[in-house]
Image (spheres, rainbow, N blue to C red):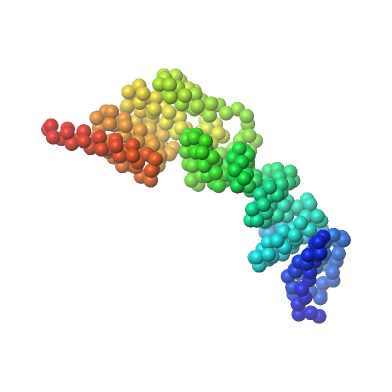
Amino acid sequence: MFSSLSVYIADDRGTKIELSPFPQSMSTYPFQVFSKSYASVVFAAFLGVVSPARANQPHDNTHVWPHIPKTPGIMAPETCIQEMKRLKAAGRSDQALKLLNMCLRDRPDVVALYYYRAKTYIELKDYPRAILDCTRQIKLEPTLAKPYEMRAKCYLALKDRKRAFSDFLRVIELEPGNRLAHEQLANLYRQEGDIRSYKRELRLSKSNATAGEKTITPAVLTRHDHPVSALLQNAGEHLAHKKPGLALEEIKKLMKFSDQDFEVEHFDRGEAYDLQAQAFQQMDLHDEAIAALDQFLRFQPNNNRAFYLKAQSYFAQGKYEECMTCCDKASRGDKILSNAVAELRTKAAERLKLRLQRR
């Protein structure tokens, strides 16, 4: 009947939005109008590519947006999304946004439509409206991590670090393996001067298997008590006040917890060995400090700081060759430690040279 046909719909202001041309086979399927809303016209027009037998069945949108749950219904919101993507690919984001607005009037229960409208708002740098759509997604599906992640990005763009921090924490609770959230939390911790938390989040962002991903449920992750974190903090404060004996008492309590208890709070047992080594160093027990650091490196084999601490203990023992070897390992890829490591290595080399000259 037609080789192709361009169809237009109009929004409330009368602005026309051109839809994709119908295929040649469109005449084989009659139009079916399910409601009088503008969005219904969009979907009815696209029945040229959907058989009448399937028109009244729930739509499986798993393959269209796998990270968004299914939304059954007689309408096909994925059709609207496909057309929206075509408009955006053609550089017509304003019309894509108008199309999403009309679709949402007809189907305000579809999370995916809010997701793509929020995404469009972000592209247009309209962050306040994007935040509203992210919040609507969360109200419909509170267990989805993606809306929290998008909303956190919007808060960062608006320089609201407190709300961004809260949303990124929620992302980690829902998806412990979310690398982007760990990276952003690391940046926020660094800006606040919390170096320990910064290093922890940075390590988790680079990890292939994030702590708790396999065995810990979101219900456990949202618990209010944090005994491991509290004991680590207490031990750190004791070390800061040069009270290594009290620090070792806290660490002894820490060692009684299981690996899972550490993972729940996004720590590993290596953190405890790190503090234990520092306590031993303050007590000039360098053999014990080196043994603790060896345990620390079992959990974090590429930790530059652990090698630097080992180098300090070897230097204190007069083992300058071992000190220089650890300095070489500590200086790999760590610009923060590079100056301190270079200074220690120079001292060790000078002491070793003097020793050899005396022989």
